[in-house]
Length: 406
Image 1: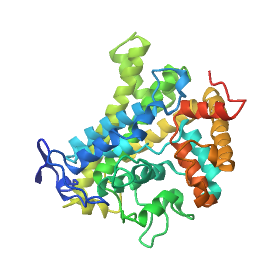
Image 2 (image 1 turned 135 degrees about the horizontal axis):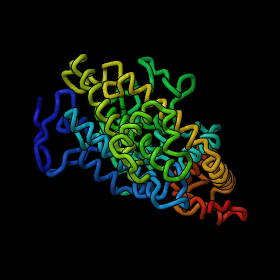
Image 3 (image 1 turned 180 degrees about the horizontal axis):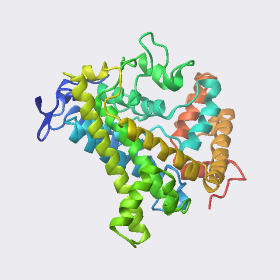
């Protein structure tokens, strides 16, 4: 055990946690804060960023016009942060680092959710493609321009490491891409930043990053069930097709017969979150006891994820995702809107690519000094940063056939 006395109180951390007092620092050295740890400082920088504020008007599943009570990227991010902190607290990890990674994990998302990302990747295919996780790194290391001495937010090494590889190593020991990048190359933003700072892309990230990653899965499983039910895309009884959800539904109905639908939905959703969180904590404790990591580097070199679902819960969670895919993400009402918004993103990209000078300042500055690839990347950065509403407004400014989402 070690005790770190930085900031407004002492934190008792496990040996395998990321000690904020032993951070590897920032790309651009800065004086330490007398009142905040490096990760508390990173959290504050993320919250005060423009990209974070824009999450309020970016789609999670349902586009903004469909109702005020559906999740946005911002409310999703806050829910992920709460779950990540709960996991970190239970496992004696640094809560502030886990929170940082939860708050920053979606900063690179395009407008209109995954549909926007898919279209952007299609448009950027000749120029290295698009990946929202890599774009999040680009946001915090380049696109946020708030400080006099550097671009980006100049976050601590551990925050950047966790942001880039919270789902696991990106390359093997020989530098060959892994996972979804296997057989191709890493996204542009990650390759570019690797020239500036080594984030050890061939190792696992800290346990705090692993907690933030699994918190993301738990949060969107639960809130997409909630939003899908409230949107009328499926009925409560349809959940009996999924054993995990059927068990919870029977438990709720047995304890509260005749419960009104709104409360019934809430009971199902919160019990789903609780079971998943408690399962992750139990599995992580078992993995940690087995590995017996003496420090955070042992976690990075473990060769596997430590903060994860147990095998039975992983199977159940996949069944929940399969249900959501069929009943929510592929529902005709959702697909109809996705088809409309995909045209908005595609139209904007090709118009700005052919006429980049019609982008507003500062996006249209210095275009004569950059090549075709750089122009496309700038267009991509501009569109990826848009909110849903701003993308619609820009389309309306440039085209006469903007889709009516209402």
